[in-house]
Image (cartoon, rainbow, N blue to C red; front, side):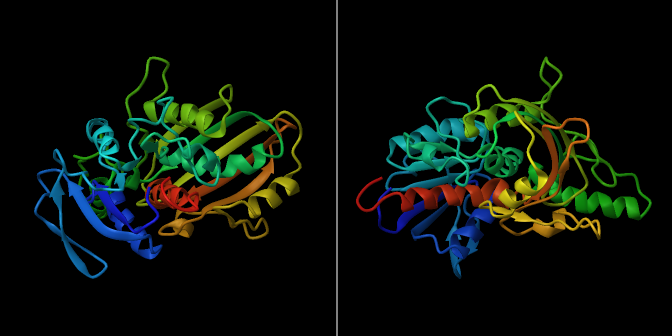
Length: 342
C-alpha cells in the first residue's frame, strides 16, 4: 500500500462488523483520504455517517475497486470469493473477514500480536481469522514462546454477535418475549437464544465436529506454525449479546509453573489479566464489551495432568475478534514500509 492517506473501501459496511470498522478507523486515526462504503444492492443508496460526513452506500459491481488502496471485507464467504480477487487485481490490498481464504496456502492468516511476519508475504489478500481463534491464539502464543504446546482442549461460549446484528436484535426481542410470558420463536438462529444455549449451529461434519470447531483447529495450527498441534474444540452459542468466552486446557511438553505463565500473560500484547482468587473475580463478557484487550484469568494447574494448565478468557467478538484485528493488520502493513510501496 502507498505511504500516503489511503482510499479505503468497506465491503459489508452495513453489518455489525462493518459498523465497527467505521468506528475504529475514526478512533485510531487511520490515514483515510476517501472512504467508500459498499454493500448489497438492497442497501445501496442509503447513507451513513462517518467523521461528521454523510456517505452514500454504493453497490458492489464491476470497476468499483479501481483506485482503491485497501478493502476491509466483512460480507460473507461467497461475496469475498467473488470480489476479493477482483479487488486485488485492481491493485488493492484486501483484508477479508470471511472464511473464504483462511486456509488457502498462498493467503496469510494473521493475528498481528502473534504472527505479524506472515502479513508481509501477501499477494493482495490477507485473511482475518475466525473470532474464537483470534482470542485463543492471543493467550496461547506467549506461552508457546516459552514452552512447547502439545495439546489444547477448548470450550467456547459464543455470544449472539457472532451471528451478526440480526441475531443480536433477535436476542433482545425474544428475551422480552420470555419475560412477558410469551413463547420465543427464532427466525434468525435455529433455536431461540433467550434464556437458552445450544451447540454451535455451523454445519456438522462427518467426524461429528461442526465447522466452527474445525476452524479453531486448522486456523490455530496455521497462525502459530504448529501443523501437528492437537486441538479439540466444543463451541456453544450462549445468551450473551456481545463478547465470547473460552475455557482452555493447555498441555505442554513439560510442567509450566503457574506463576510464570501468569507473568507472561500479564505482559503479553493484547492481553489483560483479570484475576482475584480471594474474591472469585475473573473475566466476564461485560469486562471486554466495546474494549480492545482479551481478558485472561483463573490460570491454574490442571490437577489431572502435571504438564497442563487451565485458563479462562473473554474477548469482544466484534472488536478484537473481527474489526479491530483487521484494522491492526492494515496498520501493520503501513508500519512495515519505510517509504514508497509495500
